Image (cartoon, rainbow over all chains, first blue to last red; front, side, top):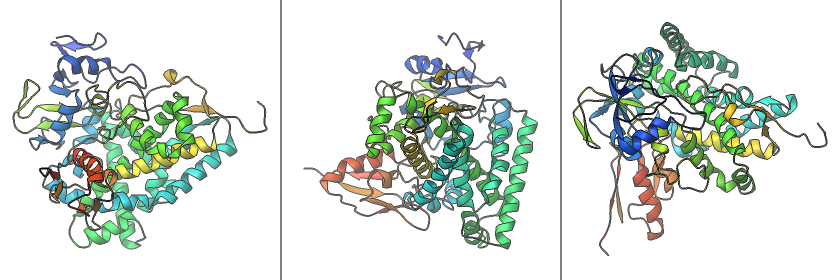
Length: 412
Length: 67
Protein backbone atom coordinates (compact mmCIF):
# COMPACT_ATOMS: atom_id res chain seq x y z
CA UNK A 1 0.00 0.00 0.00
CA UNK A 2 1.26 3.44 -0.89
CA UNK A 3 1.36 5.86 2.01
CA UNK A 4 2.85 9.25 2.70
CA UNK A 5 6.61 9.05 2.99
CA UNK A 6 6.37 11.33 6.01
CA UNK A 7 4.10 8.86 7.79
CA UNK A 8 5.60 6.27 10.11
CA UNK A 9 4.52 2.75 9.34
CA UNK A 10 4.04 -0.25 11.56
CA UNK A 11 2.77 -3.58 10.23
CA UNK A 12 2.31 -1.87 6.87
CA UNK A 13 -0.43 0.43 8.18
CA UNK A 14 0.16 4.18 8.31
CA UNK A 15 0.25 5.64 11.80
CA UNK A 16 -2.53 8.05 12.84
CA UNK A 17 -2.50 11.00 13.46
CA UNK A 18 -0.46 11.96 10.41
CA UNK A 19 1.92 14.92 10.26
CA UNK A 20 0.55 18.20 8.97
CA UNK A 21 2.49 20.31 6.46
CA UNK A 22 1.71 23.72 7.96
CA UNK A 23 -1.20 25.68 9.44
CA UNK A 24 -3.29 25.49 6.28
CA UNK A 25 -2.11 22.27 4.68
CA UNK A 26 -3.83 19.12 5.92
CA UNK A 27 -1.68 15.95 5.98
CA UNK A 28 -0.63 14.97 2.42
CA UNK A 29 -1.66 11.44 3.32
CA UNK A 30 -5.33 12.50 3.37
CA UNK A 31 -5.18 13.49 -0.31
CA UNK A 32 -3.19 10.38 -1.27
CA UNK A 33 -5.55 8.03 0.54
CA UNK A 34 -8.63 9.83 -0.81
CA UNK A 35 -7.51 9.08 -4.37
CA UNK A 36 -6.65 5.43 -3.76
CA UNK A 37 -8.34 4.15 -0.62
CA UNK A 38 -10.98 6.56 0.69
CA UNK A 39 -11.74 4.21 3.60
CA UNK A 40 -8.31 2.96 4.74
CA UNK A 41 -6.85 1.12 7.71
CA UNK A 42 -4.55 3.13 9.99
CA UNK A 43 -2.66 2.23 13.16
CA UNK A 44 -3.32 4.03 16.46
CA UNK A 45 -0.91 4.73 19.35
CA UNK A 46 -2.36 1.85 21.38
CA UNK A 47 -1.64 -0.68 18.64
CA UNK A 48 -5.25 -0.94 17.48
CA UNK A 49 -6.27 -0.42 13.87
CA UNK A 50 -9.07 1.94 12.80
CA UNK A 51 -10.62 3.15 9.55
CA UNK A 52 -9.62 6.60 8.31
CA UNK A 53 -12.21 8.06 5.93
CA UNK A 54 -11.05 10.84 3.61
CA UNK A 55 -13.91 11.44 1.15
CA UNK A 56 -16.82 13.85 1.71
CA UNK A 57 -19.49 11.41 0.48
CA UNK A 58 -18.36 8.51 2.68
CA UNK A 59 -17.85 10.72 5.74
CA UNK A 60 -21.36 12.13 5.32
CA UNK A 61 -22.76 8.65 4.83
CA UNK A 62 -21.05 7.15 7.90
CA UNK A 63 -21.84 10.08 10.22
CA UNK A 64 -25.55 9.69 9.41
CA UNK A 65 -25.57 5.86 9.53
CA UNK A 66 -27.54 4.38 12.47
CA UNK A 67 -25.07 1.45 12.55
CA UNK A 68 -22.38 3.90 13.69
CA UNK A 69 -22.09 4.86 17.37
CA UNK A 70 -20.71 7.98 19.06
CA UNK A 71 -20.39 6.30 22.47
CA UNK A 72 -16.90 6.92 23.82
CA UNK A 73 -17.41 4.07 26.28
CA UNK A 74 -17.64 1.52 23.44
CA UNK A 75 -14.48 -0.64 23.63
CA UNK A 76 -13.83 -0.08 19.91
CA UNK A 77 -14.05 3.72 19.98
CA UNK A 78 -10.78 5.15 18.60
CA UNK A 79 -8.78 7.88 20.33
CA UNK A 80 -5.94 9.77 18.65
CA UNK A 81 -3.62 9.94 21.68
CA UNK A 82 -3.55 8.82 25.34
CA UNK A 83 -4.61 12.35 26.31
CA UNK A 84 -7.71 12.11 24.10
CA UNK A 85 -8.64 8.76 25.61
CA UNK A 86 -8.36 10.30 29.07
CA UNK A 87 -10.42 13.33 28.05
CA UNK A 88 -13.25 11.48 26.31
CA UNK A 89 -13.57 7.99 27.76
CA UNK A 90 -15.93 9.08 30.55
CA UNK A 91 -17.87 11.67 28.53
CA UNK A 92 -21.55 11.60 29.50
CA UNK A 93 -22.88 14.54 27.45
CA UNK A 94 -25.04 13.90 24.37
CA UNK A 95 -21.97 14.08 22.13
CA UNK A 96 -21.23 10.58 23.47
CA UNK A 97 -24.80 9.17 23.24
CA UNK A 98 -26.74 7.44 20.50
CA UNK A 99 -30.44 7.74 19.64
CA UNK A 100 -32.88 7.70 21.35
CA UNK A 101 -30.95 8.79 24.50
CA UNK A 102 -29.05 11.35 22.42
CA UNK A 103 -32.23 13.07 21.25
CA UNK A 104 -33.72 13.25 24.73
CA UNK A 105 -30.63 15.04 26.08
CA UNK A 106 -29.94 17.23 23.05
CA UNK A 107 -33.53 18.44 22.83
CA UNK A 108 -33.20 19.96 26.31
CA UNK A 109 -30.80 22.41 24.68
CA UNK A 110 -31.88 22.91 21.09
CA UNK A 111 -34.32 25.74 21.63
CA UNK A 112 -31.62 27.90 23.24
CA UNK A 113 -29.49 27.57 20.09
CA UNK A 114 -32.27 27.97 17.51
CA UNK A 115 -31.23 30.19 14.61
CA UNK A 116 -33.63 33.06 15.31
CA UNK A 117 -32.96 33.01 19.05
CA UNK A 118 -29.19 33.20 18.55
CA UNK A 119 -29.69 36.05 16.09
CA UNK A 120 -31.11 38.09 18.98
CA UNK A 121 -27.64 37.94 20.58
CA UNK A 122 -26.11 39.93 17.70
CA UNK A 123 -26.05 43.24 19.65
CA UNK A 124 -24.42 41.50 22.63
CA UNK A 125 -21.71 39.98 20.43
CA UNK A 126 -21.22 43.33 18.66
CA UNK A 127 -20.75 45.09 22.03
CA UNK A 128 -18.16 42.55 23.14
CA UNK A 129 -16.25 42.86 19.83
CA UNK A 130 -16.37 46.67 19.96
CA UNK A 131 -14.97 46.66 23.51
CA UNK A 132 -12.17 44.24 22.62
CA UNK A 133 -11.12 46.30 19.59
CA UNK A 134 -11.24 49.48 21.70
CA UNK A 135 -8.76 47.81 24.06
CA UNK A 136 -6.57 46.62 21.18
CA UNK A 137 -6.46 50.14 19.69
CA UNK A 138 -5.70 51.68 23.04
CA UNK A 139 -2.83 49.35 23.91
CA UNK A 140 -1.28 48.99 20.44
CA UNK A 141 0.05 48.64 17.88
CA UNK A 142 1.27 45.91 18.04
CA UNK A 143 -1.16 43.28 19.37
CA UNK A 144 -1.48 39.53 19.78
CA UNK A 145 -4.89 38.70 18.33
CA UNK A 146 -4.95 35.20 19.85
CA UNK A 147 -4.77 36.58 23.39
CA UNK A 148 -6.56 39.89 22.86
CA UNK A 149 -9.36 38.89 20.50
CA UNK A 150 -9.69 35.21 19.53
CA UNK A 151 -9.63 33.79 23.06
CA UNK A 152 -11.68 36.66 24.44
CA UNK A 153 -14.78 36.88 22.23
CA UNK A 154 -16.11 33.29 22.49
CA UNK A 155 -15.26 33.05 26.21
CA UNK A 156 -16.98 36.34 27.02
CA UNK A 157 -19.97 35.37 24.87
CA UNK A 158 -20.42 32.01 26.61
CA UNK A 159 -20.07 33.79 29.98
CA UNK A 160 -22.95 36.04 28.93
CA UNK A 161 -25.10 33.07 27.87
CA UNK A 162 -24.32 31.07 31.02
CA UNK A 163 -24.69 34.06 33.34
CA UNK A 164 -21.08 34.01 34.58
CA UNK A 165 -18.88 36.97 35.49
CA UNK A 166 -16.39 37.41 32.61
CA UNK A 167 -13.46 36.96 35.04
CA UNK A 168 -14.38 33.28 35.32
CA UNK A 169 -13.26 32.66 31.74
CA UNK A 170 -9.66 32.05 32.77
CA UNK A 171 -10.73 29.14 34.97
CA UNK A 172 -12.45 27.16 32.23
CA UNK A 173 -10.07 28.24 29.45
CA UNK A 174 -6.99 26.96 31.25
CA UNK A 175 -8.63 23.62 32.05
CA UNK A 176 -9.93 23.08 28.53
CA UNK A 177 -6.49 23.88 27.13
CA UNK A 178 -5.04 21.13 29.36
CA UNK A 179 -7.80 18.77 28.21
CA UNK A 180 -7.34 19.49 24.52
CA UNK A 181 -3.54 19.42 24.20
CA UNK A 182 -2.75 16.16 22.40
CA UNK A 183 0.44 15.64 24.41
CA UNK A 184 -0.99 16.32 27.88
CA UNK A 185 -0.24 13.83 30.64
CA UNK A 186 -3.43 11.71 30.83
CA UNK A 187 -3.49 12.09 34.63
CA UNK A 188 -3.55 15.88 34.21
CA UNK A 189 -6.37 15.59 31.66
CA UNK A 190 -8.39 13.55 34.16
CA UNK A 191 -7.67 16.14 36.87
CA UNK A 192 -8.70 19.05 34.60
CA UNK A 193 -11.92 17.24 33.71
CA UNK A 194 -12.73 16.59 37.39
CA UNK A 195 -12.09 20.25 38.19
CA UNK A 196 -14.45 21.33 35.42
CA UNK A 197 -17.20 18.95 36.55
CA UNK A 198 -16.90 20.23 40.14
CA UNK A 199 -16.89 23.81 38.87
CA UNK A 200 -20.04 23.30 36.79
CA UNK A 201 -21.74 21.43 39.65
CA UNK A 202 -21.07 24.43 41.90
CA UNK A 203 -22.47 26.75 39.22
CA UNK A 204 -25.67 24.71 39.09
CA UNK A 205 -25.93 24.90 42.90
CA UNK A 206 -25.42 28.67 42.87
CA UNK A 207 -28.06 29.16 40.16
CA UNK A 208 -30.44 27.01 42.19
CA UNK A 209 -29.93 29.33 45.15
CA UNK A 210 -30.13 32.57 43.17
CA UNK A 211 -31.49 32.12 39.63
CA UNK A 212 -30.79 34.75 37.00
CA UNK A 213 -31.78 35.41 33.40
CA UNK A 214 -29.37 32.89 31.87
CA UNK A 215 -29.10 29.43 30.33
CA UNK A 216 -28.07 27.56 33.47
CA UNK A 217 -30.95 29.06 35.49
CA UNK A 218 -33.43 28.17 32.75
CA UNK A 219 -32.14 24.60 32.54
CA UNK A 220 -32.27 24.23 36.33
CA UNK A 221 -35.88 25.43 36.33
CA UNK A 222 -37.10 23.57 33.22
CA UNK A 223 -35.10 20.33 33.37
CA UNK A 224 -33.69 19.72 36.85
CA UNK A 225 -36.51 20.99 39.07
CA UNK A 226 -39.10 19.21 36.90
CA UNK A 227 -37.20 15.93 37.11
CA UNK A 228 -36.72 15.79 33.31
CA UNK A 229 -32.95 15.58 33.77
CA UNK A 230 -30.74 14.21 36.51
CA UNK A 231 -28.15 16.50 38.04
CA UNK A 232 -25.23 14.47 36.65
CA UNK A 233 -26.70 14.64 33.15
CA UNK A 234 -27.09 18.40 33.36
CA UNK A 235 -23.57 18.90 34.73
CA UNK A 236 -22.06 16.78 31.93
CA UNK A 237 -24.01 18.69 29.29
CA UNK A 238 -23.05 22.10 30.68
CA UNK A 239 -19.37 21.14 30.93
CA UNK A 240 -19.43 20.06 27.31
CA UNK A 241 -21.29 23.18 26.16
CA UNK A 242 -18.88 25.47 27.95
CA UNK A 243 -15.88 23.78 26.29
CA UNK A 244 -17.50 23.57 22.87
CA UNK A 245 -18.56 27.19 23.13
CA UNK A 246 -15.15 28.79 23.41
CA UNK A 247 -12.25 26.72 22.10
CA UNK A 248 -13.50 25.93 18.60
CA UNK A 249 -14.55 29.47 17.73
CA UNK A 250 -11.39 30.95 19.26
CA UNK A 251 -9.23 28.99 16.85
CA UNK A 252 -11.48 29.84 13.90
CA UNK A 253 -11.12 33.56 14.69
CA UNK A 254 -7.32 33.51 14.88
CA UNK A 255 -6.86 31.33 11.80
CA UNK A 256 -9.56 33.22 9.91
CA UNK A 257 -7.69 36.50 10.39
CA UNK A 258 -4.56 34.86 8.96
CA UNK A 259 -6.39 33.46 5.93
CA UNK A 260 -8.12 36.76 5.20
CA UNK A 261 -4.89 38.76 5.47
CA UNK A 262 -3.27 36.23 3.14
CA UNK A 263 -5.99 36.91 0.50
CA UNK A 264 -6.10 40.71 0.45
CA UNK A 265 -8.17 40.99 -2.74
CA UNK A 266 -10.99 38.89 -1.33
CA UNK A 267 -10.75 40.66 2.02
CA UNK A 268 -11.12 44.00 0.21
CA UNK A 269 -14.24 42.72 -1.58
CA UNK A 270 -15.87 41.67 1.70
CA UNK A 271 -14.96 44.95 3.37
CA UNK A 272 -16.50 46.89 0.49
CA UNK A 273 -19.59 44.69 0.29
CA UNK A 274 -20.45 43.37 3.79
CA UNK A 275 -23.17 41.12 2.36
CA UNK A 276 -20.30 38.86 1.31
CA UNK A 277 -19.36 38.10 4.94
CA UNK A 278 -21.78 35.19 5.59
CA UNK A 279 -20.48 33.38 2.49
CA UNK A 280 -16.89 34.24 3.40
CA UNK A 281 -17.43 32.74 6.87
CA UNK A 282 -18.72 29.48 5.33
CA UNK A 283 -15.62 29.31 3.13
CA UNK A 284 -13.38 30.01 6.14
CA UNK A 285 -15.11 27.19 8.03
CA UNK A 286 -14.51 24.86 5.08
CA UNK A 287 -10.97 25.93 4.27
CA UNK A 288 -9.66 25.99 7.84
CA UNK A 289 -11.66 23.06 9.31
CA UNK A 290 -10.30 23.18 12.86
CA UNK A 291 -11.29 19.52 13.30
CA UNK A 292 -8.18 17.90 11.78
CA UNK A 293 -8.31 14.43 13.37
CA UNK A 294 -11.94 14.03 14.40
CA UNK A 295 -14.89 13.33 14.74
CA UNK A 296 -14.49 9.64 15.57
CA UNK A 297 -17.05 6.84 15.69
CA UNK A 298 -17.34 3.06 16.10
CA UNK A 299 -19.31 0.54 14.02
CA UNK A 300 -22.04 -1.43 15.81
CA UNK A 301 -22.75 -3.65 12.77
CA UNK A 302 -20.78 -4.67 9.68
CA UNK A 303 -20.87 -1.87 7.07
CA UNK A 304 -19.95 -2.27 3.40
CA UNK A 305 -18.57 0.99 2.05
CA UNK A 306 -16.21 2.06 -0.76
CA UNK A 307 -15.19 -1.54 -1.47
CA UNK A 308 -14.30 -2.48 2.11
CA UNK A 309 -16.14 -3.99 5.07
CA UNK A 310 -16.00 -2.10 8.33
CA UNK A 311 -16.53 -4.82 10.94
CA UNK A 312 -18.64 -4.56 14.08
CA UNK A 313 -16.52 -2.90 16.77
CA UNK A 314 -14.08 -1.23 14.35
CA UNK A 315 -13.11 2.38 15.03
CA UNK A 316 -13.89 5.03 12.40
CA UNK A 317 -12.11 8.39 11.99
CA UNK A 318 -13.80 11.04 9.84
CA UNK A 319 -11.72 14.26 9.92
CA UNK A 320 -13.73 17.32 8.90
CA UNK A 321 -10.74 18.70 7.01
CA UNK A 322 -10.54 15.53 4.88
CA UNK A 323 -14.16 15.97 3.76
CA UNK A 324 -13.76 19.69 3.23
CA UNK A 325 -10.72 19.39 0.97
CA UNK A 326 -12.31 16.68 -1.20
CA UNK A 327 -12.20 17.84 -4.86
CA UNK A 328 -15.40 15.89 -5.64
CA UNK A 329 -17.31 18.05 -3.16
CA UNK A 330 -15.35 21.31 -3.65
CA UNK A 331 -13.62 21.88 -7.00
CA UNK A 332 -10.05 23.15 -6.57
CA UNK A 333 -10.41 22.50 -2.81
CA UNK A 334 -7.06 23.98 -1.71
CA UNK A 335 -7.99 27.38 -3.12
CA UNK A 336 -9.68 29.82 -0.74
CA UNK A 337 -12.63 31.45 -2.54
CA UNK A 338 -15.27 33.43 -0.67
CA UNK A 339 -17.55 33.25 -3.71
CA UNK A 340 -17.81 29.47 -3.78
CA UNK A 341 -20.95 27.72 -2.50
CA UNK A 342 -19.46 26.06 0.56
CA UNK A 343 -22.49 25.48 2.77
CA UNK A 344 -22.28 21.69 2.43
CA UNK A 345 -18.94 21.66 4.27
CA UNK A 346 -18.71 19.31 7.25
CA UNK A 347 -16.85 21.70 9.57
CA UNK A 348 -19.66 21.19 12.11
CA UNK A 349 -19.74 17.41 11.34
CA UNK A 350 -22.89 15.71 10.09
CA UNK A 351 -25.62 13.40 11.36
CA UNK A 352 -27.57 13.82 14.58
CA UNK A 353 -24.43 14.97 16.39
CA UNK A 354 -23.84 17.95 14.09
CA UNK A 355 -22.77 20.96 16.16
CA UNK A 356 -25.58 22.38 18.28
CA UNK A 357 -23.92 25.77 18.62
CA UNK A 358 -23.26 26.44 14.95
CA UNK A 359 -25.59 29.46 14.69
CA UNK A 360 -23.64 31.05 17.56
CA UNK A 361 -20.29 30.27 15.94
CA UNK A 362 -21.47 31.80 12.65
CA UNK A 363 -22.75 34.90 14.43
CA UNK A 364 -19.48 35.48 16.30
CA UNK A 365 -17.38 34.93 13.18
CA UNK A 366 -19.49 37.23 11.01
CA UNK A 367 -19.40 40.05 13.56
CA UNK A 368 -15.73 39.76 14.51
CA UNK A 369 -14.24 39.69 11.00
CA UNK A 370 -16.44 42.46 9.66
CA UNK A 371 -15.79 44.73 12.63
CA UNK A 372 -12.06 44.02 12.92
CA UNK A 373 -11.30 44.89 9.30
CA UNK A 374 -13.61 47.92 9.30
CA UNK A 375 -11.96 49.31 12.41
CA UNK A 376 -8.35 48.38 11.53
CA UNK A 377 -8.18 48.39 7.72
CA UNK A 378 -4.37 48.50 7.66
CA UNK A 379 -3.97 45.39 9.84
CA UNK A 380 -1.01 43.20 8.87
CA UNK A 381 0.82 40.15 10.20
CA UNK A 382 4.26 40.71 11.68
CA UNK A 383 5.13 36.98 11.43
CA UNK A 384 4.68 35.32 8.02
CA UNK A 385 1.65 33.02 8.02
CA UNK A 386 3.70 29.89 7.31
CA UNK A 387 5.94 30.56 10.34
CA UNK A 388 3.12 30.81 12.89
CA UNK A 389 3.58 28.12 15.55
CA UNK A 390 0.93 25.38 15.36
CA UNK A 391 0.15 23.68 18.67
CA UNK A 392 -0.13 19.91 19.26
CA UNK A 393 -3.82 20.21 19.85
CA UNK A 394 -7.15 18.51 19.23
CA UNK A 395 -8.08 21.45 17.02
CA UNK A 396 -5.98 23.30 14.48
CA UNK A 397 -4.60 26.04 16.69
CA UNK A 398 -1.90 28.71 16.67
CA UNK A 399 -0.16 29.94 19.82
CA UNK A 400 -0.05 33.61 18.95
CA UNK A 401 -0.98 36.00 16.17
CA UNK A 402 1.25 39.08 16.20
CA UNK A 403 -0.15 41.98 14.14
CA UNK A 404 0.40 45.66 13.64
CA UNK A 405 -1.50 48.49 11.94
CA UNK A 406 -1.11 52.13 10.99
CA UNK A 407 -2.58 54.74 13.30
CA UNK A 408 -3.92 57.64 11.20
CA UNK A 409 -1.75 60.76 11.54
CA UNK A 410 1.03 58.88 13.34
CA UNK A 411 4.13 57.97 11.39
CA UNK A 412 6.06 54.90 12.42
CA UNK B 1 -42.97 20.26 -4.81
CA UNK B 2 -44.39 19.09 -1.48
CA UNK B 3 -42.33 19.04 1.75
CA UNK B 4 -42.65 16.44 4.49
CA UNK B 5 -40.70 16.86 7.74
CA UNK B 6 -40.03 14.28 10.45
CA UNK B 7 -39.88 16.07 13.80
CA UNK B 8 -38.81 12.86 15.56
CA UNK B 9 -35.66 12.67 13.45
CA UNK B 10 -35.00 16.44 13.61
CA UNK B 11 -32.13 17.47 15.91
CA UNK B 12 -32.72 21.22 15.71
CA UNK B 13 -29.53 22.04 13.85
CA UNK B 14 -31.25 24.91 12.04
CA UNK B 15 -29.73 24.25 8.61
CA UNK B 16 -33.19 24.48 7.01
CA UNK B 17 -33.95 27.84 8.63
CA UNK B 18 -30.65 29.25 7.37
CA UNK B 19 -31.22 27.87 3.87
CA UNK B 20 -34.92 28.77 3.45
CA UNK B 21 -36.18 31.03 6.27
CA UNK B 22 -39.54 31.66 4.55
CA UNK B 23 -40.31 27.96 4.49
CA UNK B 24 -38.85 26.56 7.73
CA UNK B 25 -38.76 27.68 11.35
CA UNK B 26 -37.91 26.09 14.70
CA UNK B 27 -40.42 25.67 17.50
CA UNK B 28 -39.88 27.42 20.82
CA UNK B 29 -40.14 24.27 22.94
CA UNK B 30 -37.45 21.99 21.60
CA UNK B 31 -36.02 23.76 18.54
CA UNK B 32 -37.31 21.15 16.12
CA UNK B 33 -38.49 22.03 12.64
CA UNK B 34 -41.74 23.89 11.97
CA UNK B 35 -42.94 23.84 8.38
CA UNK B 36 -44.27 27.28 7.46
CA UNK B 37 -45.24 26.28 3.90
CA UNK B 38 -45.56 22.63 2.93
CA UNK B 39 -46.06 23.58 -0.73
CA UNK B 40 -43.42 26.22 -1.43
CA UNK B 41 -43.64 28.59 -4.40
CA UNK B 42 -41.51 27.62 -7.42
CA UNK B 43 -38.97 30.39 -6.76
CA UNK B 44 -38.17 28.81 -3.37
CA UNK B 45 -37.51 25.33 -4.69
CA UNK B 46 -33.73 25.73 -4.99
CA UNK B 47 -33.47 26.91 -1.38
CA UNK B 48 -35.74 24.07 -0.21
CA UNK B 49 -33.60 21.49 -2.03
CA UNK B 50 -30.53 23.01 -0.35
CA UNK B 51 -32.28 22.73 3.04
CA UNK B 52 -33.09 19.06 2.44
CA UNK B 53 -29.54 18.34 1.30
CA UNK B 54 -27.97 20.07 4.30
CA UNK B 55 -30.25 18.56 6.96
CA UNK B 56 -27.89 16.47 9.13
CA UNK B 57 -30.70 14.24 10.43
CA UNK B 58 -32.24 13.53 7.00
CA UNK B 59 -35.55 14.82 8.39
CA UNK B 60 -36.76 16.62 5.24
CA UNK B 61 -38.35 14.68 2.39
CA UNK B 62 -39.30 16.34 -0.89
CA UNK B 63 -42.10 14.97 -3.03
CA UNK B 64 -41.67 16.28 -6.57
CA UNK B 65 -44.92 16.56 -8.51
CA UNK B 66 -45.15 15.38 -12.09
CA UNK B 67 -45.36 18.29 -14.47
